[in-house]
Length: 302
Image 1 (cartoon, rainbow, N blue to C red):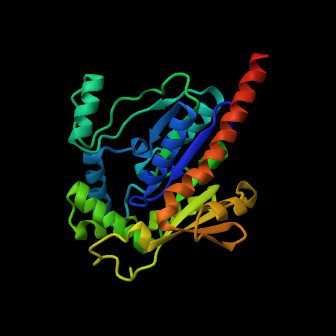
Image 2: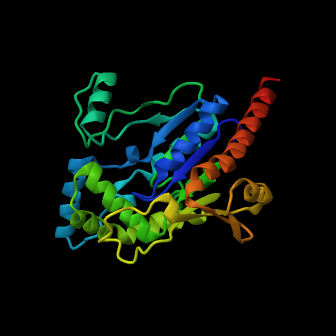
Image 3: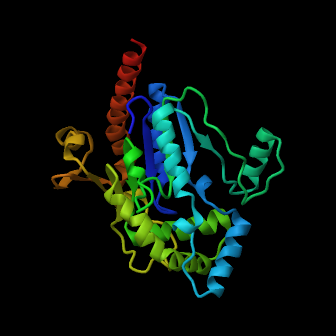
């Protein structure tokens, strides 16, 4: 970890809702005038879309039905760790983009003068100069294995963890509306990913500093037949702090109507207050990181 070059991570499974937390950070960054170097976790997959499909077929032919984007076999965990460590030491590093669709392909090709298609990676390039913080959002930002220890390089790690049925509902609907997948295809993907989900996704949330877990208060017993995603107003959000000292609980309870404490390090807020809760909680933490960075920078200049 580094006071001068802090690393912030938002991590969660596919369909978990990490984009919502990312927006909250972006709002705080904009208000505070913070220049963040943003990195997307998908860019650290080790296979492009065509290569991944071929690898899945090869694995299945060998009797392995669990080859997935959730495991180390399809990701550069070592490169994520290298990025976090290098940025923490020097404020520099390399990034690239994974192109999800034709619109992103057109945007990146126009920027880079390339001829890339959806499912491919852009070339590696330097992070923007003079950034204040590295902000990673993706699947594996807090992974710890016998080979890598990403949490050791992270100053603030946020987990986004809906209860599993809700996560599946969100993924099925997102894959259908945004990527044109049939529900059966998404269910097959969920099943294929399950061992890696248990070993490499769920374990991260013991390493995070704060977890936001959305819990639906409508029946989601069979997530594979749900026609609608439960709304925020049909949910509560359980917010867990690894260190209770990170939170001013009396202040949070006063600011977030109808919230309550469920444990000494857990506060429960109505789903409709999730965005507000995130900003109230995250803003002072980011402010502290930037204050420490300023002090460290001033000390070096002296």
